[in-house]
Image (spheres, rainbow, N blue to C red):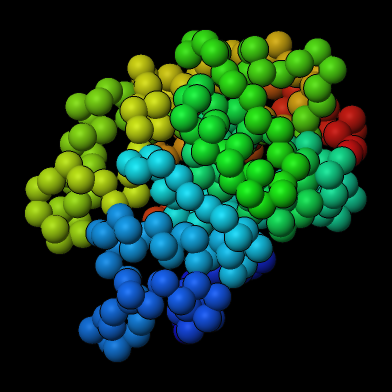
Length: 301
């Protein structure tokens, strides 16, 4: 298998999918595999059932997750790109820890919009042992996340966000301390924009013009007023209220042209430092933006 050099060096999926190993732990995956023109095993990534089965196999084989079921039509995130975010966050925290990656449950991470899949806490807890708190506004997502935790015997805190205008307010308590927050914000600015995006993605897969989603996604997962800039703007505004309770605030940024307005917002917010970290997200290049209100000399973990 060819090394996917864009993925983080610690990413277990850097060498691609080892289908022989995946099928050994998840025999049900075999029914969804096929040969590509080069004779290599793969799946039809336009098939939602195949994508879900692949995710189950990846989570079991690489992250010891025995049970992983999510409601139909809910977001089914690509594992390699998602875990890349976790590894880059570990590097970010290492900068404040003498170059050593901090591990263990005392390292606290807050996942905004954890979703029905719970993918960041599942992979991050396995890779680094961090203590995760997952937040979501959708009760169905939280029920799914709780079931995943219970069936796998995992200790992950889950909290409901009850106000769609809030991000950190209402879910960070007075005594909470977090070393890092993470978020995959809604990308689209409206349902119509989300539908056009899904149709374009489907055409790119060579499946014609349909609104069907192979990776799924509910409204709250796909769009919000103002799109990702609007959502992250609320994150920046509210992060000031919790400046002393979190070392690094971060969020994925899908569009490169979102960075300039977000950077201006952070400058006005008076952050001590802002970083833009380029990384891989599935088959494309993405990045996350990170900011802190702590002076460098005061960032030790």
